[in-house]
Length: 88
Image 1 (cartoon, rainbow, N blue to C red):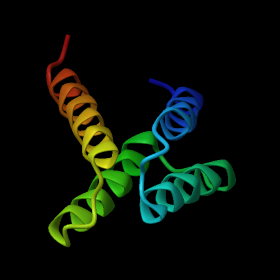
Image 2 (image 1 turned 180 degrees about the vertical axis):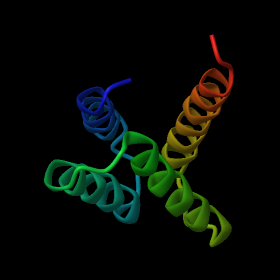
Image 3 (image 1 turned 120 degrees about the vertical axis):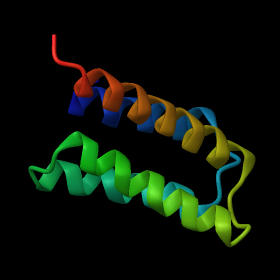
Image 4 (image 1 turned 135 degrees about the vertical axis):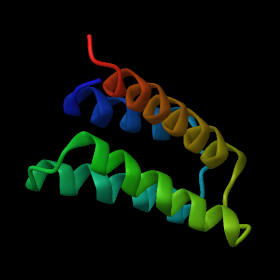
């Protein structure tokens, strides 16, 4: 997944899931604008979203849509970590 794909995926996800809380939508929009301005790696962007969503989950402020996003991002990050760990 390239940087543009991540931005597009996050924008589509927030559009399809209107039940996300204000904190969750603000987080996603903030990460998208920061990724446009800075040249950070996609892995760091994903980790920022995952860690912030985890904090919201610990505080019992994560919606069902936010939990689905957290699960999907963790799964993608886990798969890419395994893929990058093996040397082909």
